[in-house]
Image (cartoon, rainbow, N blue to C red; front, top):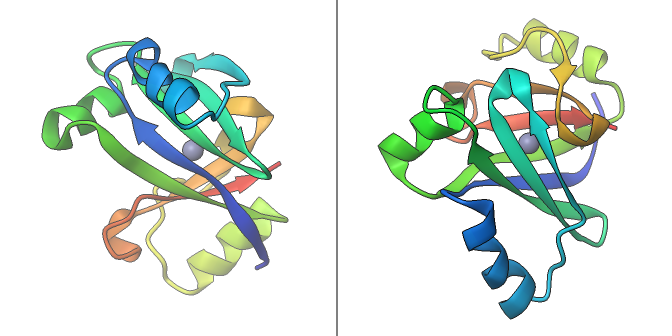
Amino acid sequence: METTMIDHVGIAVKSIDEALPFWEGALGVKCSGRETVEEQKVTTAFLPIRESEIELLEATSPDSPIAGFMEKRGEGIHHLAIRVDNLENALAHLKEKGVRLIDEHPRKGAGGARIAFIHPKAAGGILLELCER
Ligand code: ZN
């Protein structure tokens, strides 16, 4: 499998509106857009930094995975996403290596990406996302 770059870092926030003044005002990282992914019950705000980006994640419902994460750990880094050339190949490779996956098949992520998560138990406690654009 071929990994190409850190695609984005996903950060769980209570409110995107409350988080943006820090990112945009203090750090000067401008939000390029927002998108709600209904099936994951999350709204994402994109803050590009050159080729990669920060993604702020806000739950749209109390049973959202982001709401569950925040209940346990509060605001903070939720996941790290690595870009791959070919997601099917990457998943097949990892399965062959016996790596525990959350998603055995690609699913739709924000920004038109195809994504799949690797289980934190297989990745040193980090929720790792593989992302193909
Ligand atoms: Zn992500």
